[in-house]
Every structure is written in C-alpha cells, then in structure tokens.
Length: 122
Image 1 (spheres, rainbow, N blue to C red):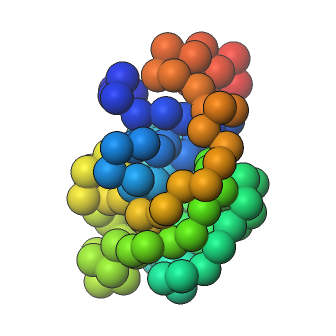
Image 2: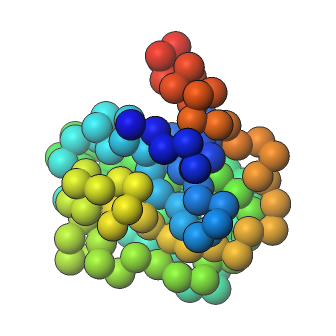
C-alpha cells in the first residue's frame, strides 16, 4: 500500500527521489474521498518544505498539498485538471501532482515503514 521506493511526509505527501515526482498518499486520498478539483502551482514556482503547493478539493473537504521538500516546480500533472479522480484511482502513478528540482528537505522524510507507523497512531 505504501511503496518502499518512495519517501513520505508527516502531512501525507509522497516523494519519488528518482523521478522527482510528488503526490498525496493513499491514506490522504482515502481520507478526502472523491477528488473533484485540483489546483496546481505554476511551473518555475519555488517552495520550501511545508509551503502549500496547491489544493485538492473533494466531496468532503478542501485540503492544501504541502511541499515535502524544498525546490522548484519543473512540471505539473495537467491530466489532473480534466481528471482529478486520478488521485483516487492511482495516487502513486498517474495521480502525481508535481515534479520538482529538489534542493533540500529530504532528510526529514519518512520511510514507508515509518509512515505506516505514523498513520496507525492517528
């Protein structure tokens, strides 16, 4: 459920340090329910760890997506504009949100095992 090749934030985002893609976890999308709208940042925008990258709106709530790392956005998943439900259907694949040139913050990310322990405590 939580791929070992990814790193995770305490705010329920994931990062693939190889592809530099970022999205929200299965736990986050399940908590939100059906995603109906995604607000994406501009390519070239720079973020620090904890900054709001964008917004995911579901039938239940509107939630910020927080940057799990520092860096500059190099690509956004424009497919989400027409198909926001991709986040529910494939949160670690087609449901990625942004790709970033990472400049820091990786040291504070959790392994899959650590993340699973975190969500069991919630």
